[in-house]
Length: 211
Length: 211
DNA sequence: TGCTGATTAGACTAAATGGTCAACAATTTG
DNA sequence: CAAATTGTTGACCATTTAGTCTAATCAGCA
Image (cartoon, rainbow over all chains, first blue to last red; front, side):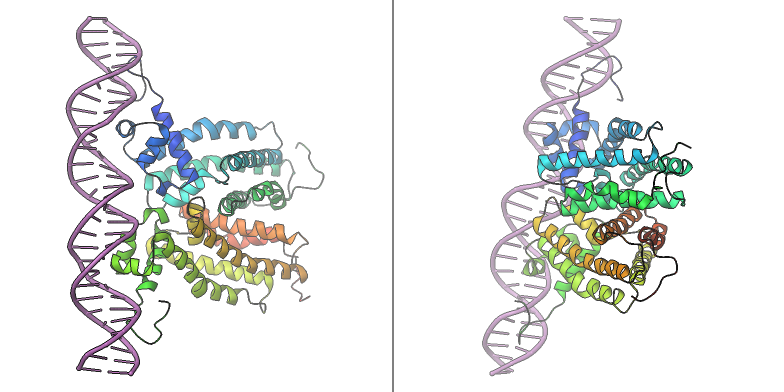
């Protein structure tokens, strides 16, 4: 059931379904898409859908975990490498966000924002399991921000502050800007994000010392 | 059709439908609720629904405008009165947000966030008219922030900055925090919003002078 | 009172949707 | 090849949903 440990037919239908679900709920919204839509986009029949998943919600949970493991975590591990200066980690990250959003905008004419934020805001009050998965991934992602802020503070790269509060502001500002850029369909907003973040973090003028 | 100018029956069914639609899409999500749900909550039969509105989207547009005219605008006019110190306008506003969100949390056990943000993030890519209405209301609301920032700057209440950029940060930070508090179902986050905003705006230490 | 137009009730239709099932296909192992 | 295991198919069902239509009600006015 979990893996093909030696026998049976092979297939990537499960992956295609997860990708289709993420893409569709990103382009439209979780509530707007149906299981039929997902199957059609994935090129998979409904019977197969129910062979792999119990429901749309079940698929969404799996898709989020897959997204984290295969895309977000590797990217974040690289961008937030300890070998990179703390503030640089953040600006690198923000530039990659901008690049990705701009690419999607170029392709489809729409700024789509953060798939997990949009999904999370839609389902938290209704779907416990899915909401919990969203929160879990948020938590994982936040740790990268936390250590970057702590490192920046330790290296004297930014003005003294309460790191917990700063991380909360940082995450909210990033999410807020990305959300606005989706609602306004305006890529420019995300482009200005790095400077907004630096303004929030108050880097020390010249200090780029290493502890 | 618009008003009972002299004859016929009177009814508040239209208002009840708008209120029900807003409440339900706030508690759950726009995509998750059906016309039947709205009718049931409003205590109105479907025949009456289609007498007043063409579709769920049409109702939503009307409900947003109604919300603005009858709730948001009056409240913002009071909170952002020019007779109030600029920074105080913002903190008053944020406290009222906290109070309202806390009340809803107490009543239903859930932090519901900003109804227009949630709705906006859900529909921008799909429903042009509804998206446009959301953007319109955002624009109106932003003007209150803009003049507060400009006034604060003119009075020397905050450190010099680019007002346009500051307003963008301000709005994004507020929306971001409220969104997070919905996703995390955590009222505390909104409670910390005033101090986060003040940190962002950098009020001058003692200066509360008037020009 | 009875007229007039606003509003309501609720039955009805067609389509969309979630979900099931049993037969069929591919792939590996013995 | 045959069994065992995994994946696929498409028909099928019950329910939900958006949307329509007609007859009935109601409020104010002449």
